[in-house]
Length: 264
Image (cartoon, rainbow, N blue to C red; front, side, top):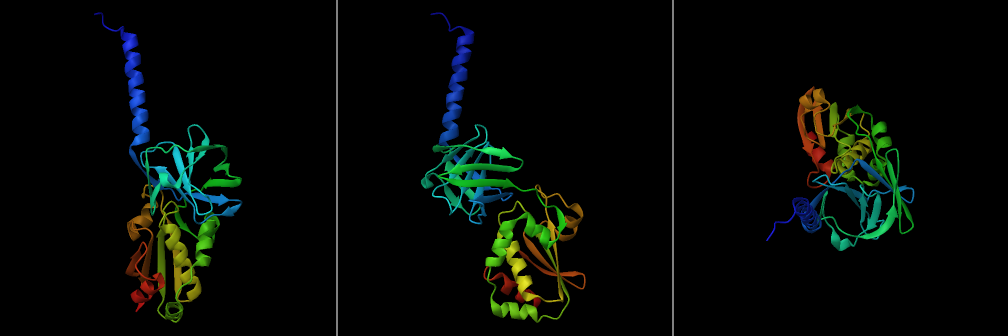
């Protein structure tokens, strides 16, 4: 029997590979990580319940979840199309999401891209995903709140415990706080507004605070990272130029109470 002509055999092998790859792509477990660089607006309002996830293997897709939407939304960046998914297709655990491959949903239309804003409609709701620039280095509280409107919403909604605030308000020793954060960090978007609200309510003239943003990759600002370390989000407490203690991430219990315990 004659062998198959080489070009034809190559075509069969190529087709087999593409079929295998497509099957692999859509059938294997896939992990997605939240990218908090995105601000989300739904119906013209900042949505603090929204999360934008991207595959950890860098495929050109995004999944948006929100309590303001009836179901998750898949954005195909290669095809520039948007799809609605069944909630059962995704499994969320904090800042991570899992799917079986790239889930197949119902097409909802395309999207437009203007500058750093991706816009589309799902079930009549206008949705905007705004890719915000990373804040790096020392920034003011006002700049941070203007950059991330969701921080303002979370700060205003947090209700510190009155007893702890009273203790912080009456504290006499001069204290400097250094807040290390990253605008792309999913934990920071909860912790930093909490710290802001606590210090605002304490309104203690003995307190001063600095906010220092970390670049993606964690290498900048180099001088600040060398001095304060690479923990984020972190509230570092200084007195007389020396570090007293630090609170890393989200401590158990009320944040303000953890701070009171440090200052005792």
